[in-house]
Image 1 (cartoon, rainbow, N blue to C red):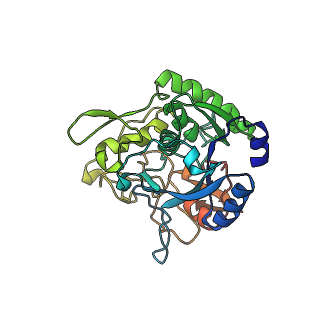
Image 2: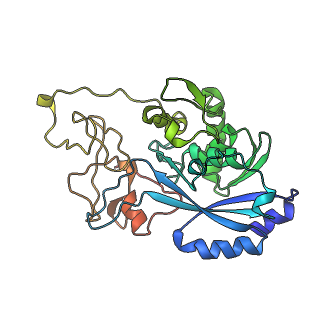
Image 3: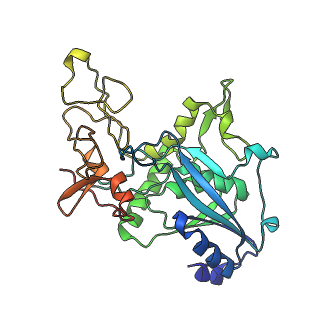
Length: 310
C-alpha cells in the first residue's frame, strides 16, 4: 500500500497516521522506515467513559493505538500545536461512536466506525487549510468527516462496495445537515469556540465535549422519543446498567433500550445474564450470540460486522 502511495505521491513531505494492533508496532515501524517515513511517534485514543461487559478479572480495553511517522523527517512537516508541552501530549480523549451509520436494513455499515474528532484533531495538527489527505478505508465515513471538517481536501479509497455505496449517501447527508462544518463548543465561560489544534481538551467542558460525538450521530435515523416511567411502572426484567434509573440501557453502547423493542443478552459466559443489549450490538456466530466486545476480545469480530436482529 505504501509503495503504491509513494508511486503516485507528488509532495516531498508527508505525515502517515495508521491505526494498528499494539503487537504490530515494530512491524509497522519497519515498513514505514522502508518507505522513507521516519521518527515514528505512538499516538493513543482513550475512549471517554468506555465500558464493556467483560469479566472482573480483566482490564477494560479503553485505548486504541496508532503510529505517526514523517517523510522525509519530522522537521520538514508543519505543526500547528500549542507551545505548552502539556497541551500537545500524544493522545486524544473523546467518546467512541455510540450510534452507527445504518444501511437500508438497519444494520451498522461498519461496527469499527470511529468518531470524527480523531482525524479532525490530527489534520488540524499537521495540515493547513486546503492541503490534501488520503483516507484509505473510510468505511462508514467517521475519519473522512473529521478531515473535511478540518478544511482539507480528501481522496477516499474504499475496497468494500457496500461501504462505498453507503458512504456516498452519507456524504450527501452531511451536506444537508451541515455536519461537514467544524462543530462549535462552549468553554467554561460560556463562550462559543471552534475546536482547533490550540484548544486543549482540558479547556472544553464535559457537557460541551459530549457534543463531539454528535457529529457522527446526526447522520443516522432521528431519535425515538424517550420513555418516561415511574418506579412503580418499571418492568421487573428491565435492569439498569448505569445512567437514569428509570431507563433500561444497553450494556454495550450505553444507549436506552426502548419499551417494546428487542433486547438480548450475551451468551459468551463472560457477561451477566441480566446485562441487556440491542440486537445490533451483538452478533451470532456458530449459533451463539455474543456481544461485540466479547467477540473483539476473542478475536472473532471482522472488520465489517453484519448484524441480524432477532
